[in-house]
Length: 515
Image 1: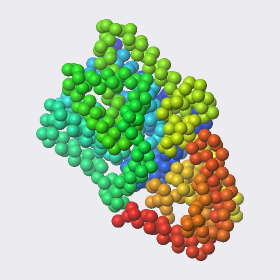
Image 2: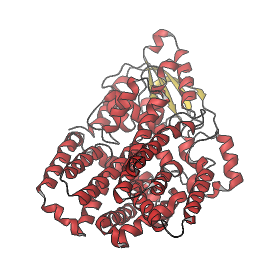
Image 3: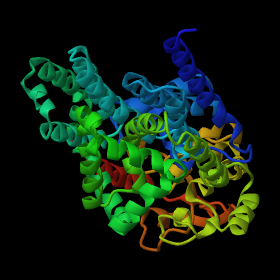
Image 4: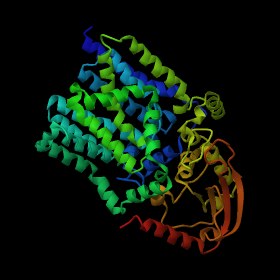
């Protein structure tokens, strides 16, 4: 068999393993992540944009819902895009002249590092990382081949990337500024670059129009992130996390960065190294979360894998075994941090026994240390909550249920209850949080209301003062669940003022996002 054919076959075998492996690494105890319920809900309200994200993810959610929205049909999308991302990295390795060892090294981060979880959860991040990688790939191939078709692929990748997550703009700007610092700046005199840029603009244009018509909710969303989460981030923690997120394979991307920045053979791809530095600097200044930078590493892994293979092709071949042992040992040791391999209590004991609970993986958004990683604590309790809410709803007489409104404080609980609502016997569940606000009805005929939230409303909350009786009917008791203690509260017998108050209040909230 010719070496080229063998290497292509090896690449696709590794891609196939990457697709299959994640489905064996989640314990059946866990449910969907709280944010996944929101993105699935968006597919029931298809639009050119949403309060949190552009619309592309909702297309895959729509297909998943079409097939019943089971775990496989939800998780297959991030899984496939993770495989595609590795495929792009593998193609870069082969284009450089890399062989078997380089392909295996380039594959390791996708099965041993934080990418395993990122390409497992149905969130915009998996599209974000894929499109960052695709954008870099198209420009690398343009530099290697001088073929203008790669500029058009660059335009398509940028446009679709912006329709996936707005942070694609950070990388696009960073990589174009980086090209200006190299001899490849001549691309800016190429008319095909501008044609490709127009293609990107027209792909993204529907979302721009949507944002304009809704008074740019992305700005509101970013302000909320800054006030509630990003303000706690600092440069030292961010830089430390860049090492820890990819620790089993950290030597590969560092080698790749050194290769493109300093090696003579890496000069043609030097813009990749500069773009990495620009992205890191930009995220430090903006106090971005550590995982926002994950899109810059797949390409560095490709260059690092190639260089490490080349450097050990004659001398120091024994170090190849050391690299593999190092990566697999640390990757397997830390895999319970990356994937929910066992039930929560079993994981907690493992973390305590190994000392992993002393790492930064256990600090949540509330800045407190908890027994479980936050993502795992967000992947339980939702079905139980929905069934309890359904039991309260169905305990009412039929004529009472017809005028009972089910309302959640958070998008996550509203999304989860809607996901399970047929099984739980619930009507459509509403919230005025996040994109759910846009889907609230314009008119109301409410007699009873079921509230799902942690606390009773304050006395100055005028809506909830319009009922004759309020009763805490049930609550959720799952100690390691992030939303443990959430209550199901029944408000009964509203007075005649309620519906007009709710109608005006919702209209006022919506008006902030309407022209």
